[in-house]
Image (cartoon, rainbow, N blue to C red; front, side):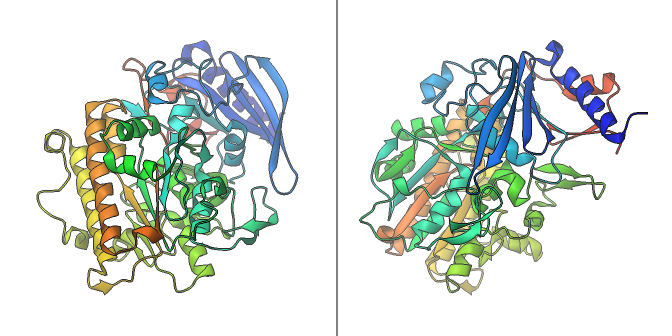
Length: 509
C-alpha cells in the first residue's frame, strides 16, 4: 500500500499532467512547485526546469540542476517589452517570447510560507481568469512591472534611468531617505545580518538614486497608483497626459523597467511587500486568499470585510515602515491613507473601519468630485467608486498636512503613504491601453498634483521626497481566451481547492 507521501506525489503528478497538457496551453503559462525544501520546478506544455537554492548566509544563490525540453524560465530579462512601443508591438506574448524577471527568487519565496500551495498555476498573458480586459497575477514581465519614481529631497536628478528594482526595495529605501541608520536584522535567508533597516528585510536600499551631497529627507510621501502599467504611466508623463508625474521624473529619477512585484503579482501580497521590505512568503500575507491546512480554513485578506484586518497575518518579527520608523524615532508621525498595510501608523484610514467610524470618511469630500472624468463616472460603477475613494484619500491627506483632520491635530508627518484605487479599477475594466485607463491616469495625475500642492503649502518642498509606485503591473488580455483549468482537473477526478485563481491545494479538504 502506498504511503501518504507517495499518494500526494501521485496526485501532484496527475494534476501536472492535466495542467501542462496541450488542451490547456492557451490559459496555463506554467506550473511551479517545490518537491522538497530548497528544490523548485517550473513546468509548461513544452518543457521543465528544476533549480535548487542555497545560502551564503547573507543572500540566496540558485543553480539549475535539470532541464527537459524548453526551459520555461530561460528568459529573465527585466527590460523585455519596455518602453510602451515594445509592449504594444507584442501584446499577449507567447510563453516562448515572454520574460520572467528574477524568477528563481520570486518563485522560491512562496514555498517558505507554511501555507504555500501544492501547485502554483500561472496563467498566460492572453488568459482572462476573471473576465477583466486588464489582468495581473502571473510571472510575466508586463504583469510584474510596476512603475518606480523617486523625486525631491535626497534624490539625484537623473530623469529616466535604464534600470529596475524590486518592490521589496521600496521600504528600506524610504527609511534610508528618512535618515535611519541600518543595524542587525533578519535578512533574506532568515539569518541575522547587519545592514538592515527593518527587523525582517529581503529588499535593499536603492542608494544609487541618492544624492551623495544632499541631506536626508525630513519627510517622505509615497503615492501608490494601484495596478498602474509602468510603460503606460511613463508614456503619459512624456506626452503631457500626466504632467505632475512628468515633473517628478524631471526633478528626480524613474526606473525605465520599473519595480518588479513579488509573486503572486496581486494587491494584498505586494501592498504588504512594499510596506515591509519582505516577500509574501516571508511577511505572511501570502495572497489575496489562501488555504491554511493546519486550521482547515480559508484565509481571505482582500474583501470589504477583511481589508482592515489584513495585517493580523503578518509573521512575528516582521515590521512595517511605520513600526521601523517609530522604533528608530519614537516621536515621528506616520500616516497611512487608504492603505491596508498600516500597522504602526499614527493615523490610518482603516483604523476608522476598525473603530466603526468609516462614515466619517465622507466628511469634507467635495461634491461634485474634483478630478473625476464625468463620462466615465457615469458609465462605470467601478470608475465612480474609485473616484470617490481617491477623492476621500486626497481630503484626508490635504487635511492632515494642513494640520487637522476629524478634530485631531497633526504636525507635518515624517512619513505619509497614500494609495489611489482608480487606476486599478480602470485598467482592469478596459485594459491598460484603453480610453478608460487614459482617463484614470489624467484624474490620478491631477490628484497627485493636489498632494504636491499640500506639501508646497506647508513650505517643506525642499525637505520632502516623493516616491510613486504601484503594487503590480497590468497586461491587456485577449478577448478570446477565457476558461477555468479547474474544469479539466474536476473532469480528471482530481480533488483540489483553487484559491485566488492559481493556488492549488490537492486532496480532499
